[in-house]
Amino acid sequence: MIEKIKEEAYKVTPYEFEKLLDEFEEQNEYLELKGIFLVIGDLHGDLDSLIKILENWENETLIFLGDYGDRGNYQVETYYFILKLKEIYKNRIILLRGNHESVSYTHLRAHETVLD
Image 1 (cartoon, one colour):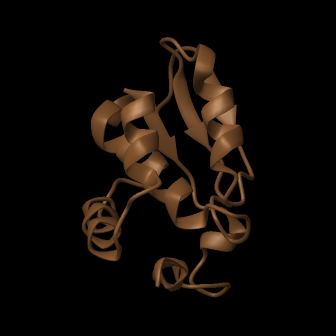
Image 2 (cartoon, rainbow, N blue to C red):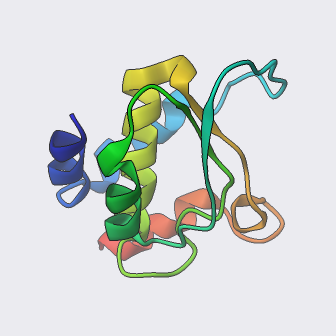
C-alpha cells in the first residue's frame, strides 16, 4: 500500500490534492489515545524520509506532529501521502497541526502553487 501511495503522491494534481484535503477539514480536535504509537514530526516536504521511516511500520498508530510541507522538494507530495494514509487507515493515523500549518503563518492551500 505504501508503494502505491508513493506513486500517487509523485503524480498528484491540484484537483486531487484539494479533494483529499477537503475530506479532512471537519475532524474532531480531541483524542483519547491507547496503544503503541510511532511519532513522526517536522517532515518539511521530505517524502523520501517519510517513506524510509514507514518501511518497518506494522501496527502502531502513527502520530504526525505537523510541519509537513513548508519547504523541501516534495511539499505537496508529502501532504498528499499523509492524507492518503489517513484516508485509508483512518483511526491509525493522527494528524496534528504544526506551526507551519496555522492560518496565521500560512494557508495550507498556498502550497498548491508548487504544482503549477
